[in-house]
Length: 125
Length: 125
View 1 (tube, rainbow over the protein chains, first blue to last red):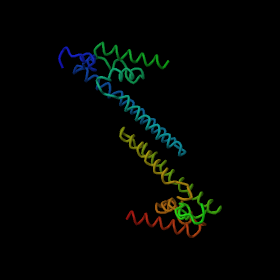
View 2 (cartoon, chains in turn yellow, blue):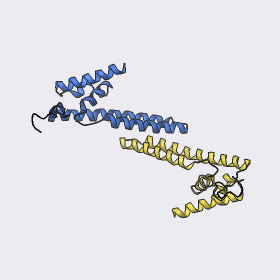
View 3 (cartoon, rainbow over the protein chains, first blue to last red):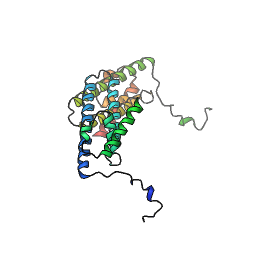
View 4 (spheres, rainbow over the protein chains, first blue to last red):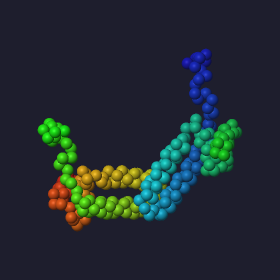
């Protein structure tokens, strides 16, 4: 493809920011921290639900809870650099990460992350 | 359809035994007893698995266990009179019912139930 190709502007990743080596380390750490926190929550809740099972219906409620949480976590934790600003924006909105966890990312990325968190907050309001 | 219809012998339920009122009571009770026993086993096992969860993988193992058991129980406990002899045969083979639980069914049904239990035992050997 030459510089004058008519398709040049439609290349889908042209506006994606690049992630420096140090930003990748920060992103990976923050991602793992949030995922770890969320999984610990699910473990605690599952143990509590199991402990309280009395009836078969409680059993299938636990199964359904686990299935829903697994699917939600699979969807939410998408470690593609093209998706990370949305992922972190959601985690910020949900209070699973704070700005300190993201400290060291460049200001444009932080702005985009905050902006998505704000959008989710307003959307939920 | 007349008595001389060529399809007469292919009517699928013509050889199904009928279930008397008292047999239906016995069947319903035995069915509920076995299902109750099996569900209590799953509840105990789920509580134990939940109690032992350490890692996220243990969580999804519990989910998978519950899903598999739910599907298996759905398949196994089929309260259609056309299916009951196979259902009871399997429960007898699995030791979830004993002959005493089925006492009062007519001898032809008991023979068919024992025969299916024996088939399963030989098939598994």
